Structure formats: C-alpha cells, structure tokens
Length: 132
Image 1: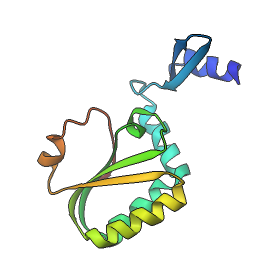
Image 2: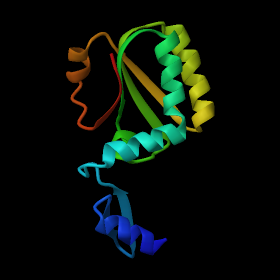
Image 3: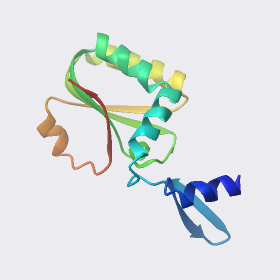
C-alpha cells in the first residue's frame, strides 16, 4: 500500500504530510484530475442516484454542491450538500434520512433560494453536482 501511495503522491494526485511517525495523505484538490476522480467517487458512493431522485422529485432545483470536508477530499463521516432552488422541505427531510442509511454517513443539507445567497456563505471548496 505504501508503494501505491508513493506513486499517487509522485503523480500529484495526493498530498503527504508528516505527523510524527505517521504520514497523512489527502487528495490534491489542485490536481487537474481531482474533479474527475471526485465524480468517480461520487458515483461509487451513490451520489449520482441520490441526486437523480432529488432532481426529479424535490422541487425546482437549479444547482447542488458538495461543500465542507468532503469537497476538500476529507471523509469525516458527514456529507454537506448545498441546494439552490425551491424545494419541498418535507420530502427533502425524508430523502436525507434515507440517504444517510444508504451512504452510511451523516448528510447535512442547506437550501438556498438563489446562487447569490449560496455564494455569500463563502464556501472555499465546492464540488458542483447539478447545473440547470
């Protein structure tokens, strides 16, 4: 495993940080392939199916973003999603509960009426999932 991590580090896909006797690795979000790799991970984790359900049934959706730690490439057990649009909050709550069970992670969703209100929150790292 150490050899493969070394190869990924040399290729610039991950960053390494010395922490005493340990080396901590995390995705390199500056790498040009980061978005594509994130997309593959999203499909593997079921984001694609979740977003299809959201888009089809939750209301008028303009955009959805993964924000917070997961957008930085850190899997802390909580997936934060920002949705821009007019949504059915009751359906969204049911869908969130179901997604937590399917993804085995805590899911936090914030809804914004428009792009400006989303951008005003100052999220530094975002992974845009849906564009209308």
